[in-house]
Length: 394
Image 1: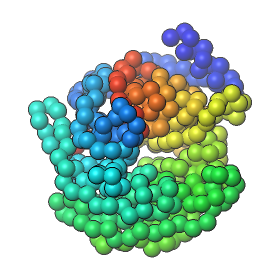
Image 2 (image 1 turned 90 degrees about the vertical axis):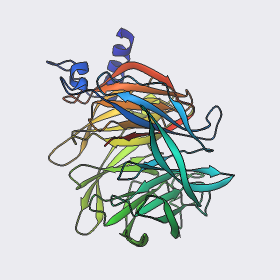
Image 3 (image 1 turned 90 degrees about the horizontal axis):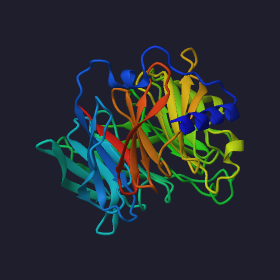
């Protein structure tokens, strides 16, 4: 613990900010909810196609202690990288390969005692290579996939029973910012998601240095190009999230290891950049052979934002200015694993789970809901080639 404290303090000094340590209730007490009813919730783990992974895994998070059960294989599929949950919480979707065909796959979640399982419902080919991300609109009528290699976004309609209906659109992005040669010579759609009011869809494209905005028709699963949000040249936008107020957007730039903050006009569906902040001081990355930002999450309270740094293998915690949504760094926390391609925060906001792709791990951290700081919970389980963490809750 002493070594960890010294490391974090050194990182703090290098980043040029002062550490603030919690006073009053302990981090563990705050994370545990101080008397709230503890329960176990489902955690679904998406993986890449590398061995020893065999598909989608499942474990349980104890919301009282933050401890994880050992993950078990829930469905065999090649490279089910990213997962999405239907609004009814009874259907799960993955993008991977079935019988060698890049597909979007629908599963029905079943319960066997305390263990949940996945029952294959149906699948549809994507039509433009393997997808990097999948998302469901808030009404459960429309599914989107983003294809990094193809530089495209695909739309699918869903049936009322949660199964896949048909492919309704495949839109190829065009161009490339060329700010970073070899990475931005062509479009690379990396994420897909929806506005809180379900009027627009957003697709950050690493190759374009833009977030492509589409007007959507959920009932017919249709997309119409609406506009763009631009990040600084060479940023390489990867993932994005809305603030709970629906008026601020946070875009994680993979190549620059930075976050760009946008004001979002809910009426016009437009986003204007107003701040870009590094996730890690460039001085701390000089000796890294590989460096890349991977995931961004907004705390349910809207008070904090977190992003993951591959290569440096850390998570950066940011404080949100409640007057304008801008960010300032709180701390940088080691993930106790290698290559954190993904992490997630449980619905209560008390626990953060970090997936280590190359260490084949899933590690639990307590979130101090007063300060935003993370404390390693010493629960670290084996999760083969983990690259997506998805909570299922009622």
